Image (tube, one colour):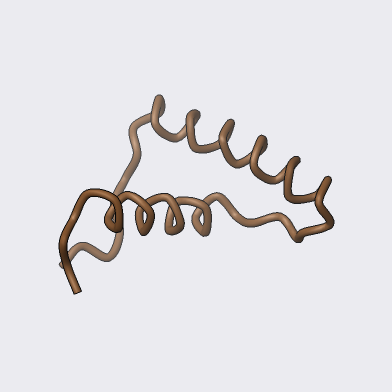
Length: 55
């Protein structure tokens, strides 16, 4: 099982920009910001729930 993977520079930049936007909204709503890695975990979890049938 993969426990770590690398992003190419384009992917890393997209994650960084998305994290900035998400964290701006979280701060505006009085919610603590999240790290880029935490955001990626949430994105992956949502993608798996939407597109996969697993338990």
